[in-house]
Length: 100
Image (tube, rainbow, N blue to C red; front, side, top):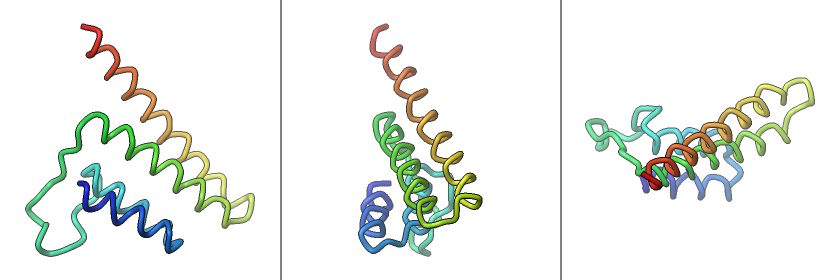
């Protein structure tokens, strides 16, 4: 999953936000691998990596939304909020496990 995450950041630098979001989703295991040699390998990110990946997906959705008209951007802003909510939910779950 680290390889997809690193590539996702590189794609942000190159302003390929859609590809970046896809690689963060691949790092979570939500999308299939994009290269033939990794077809049988599924990422298994740790809880802290999952939190970061969801936050990264939210940030990329905001970057995509900023490029669109206000009417078109709404879906990306909603997706960003959902990703941030998922990250916060995972933080709460992780904190509950840590306190047990």
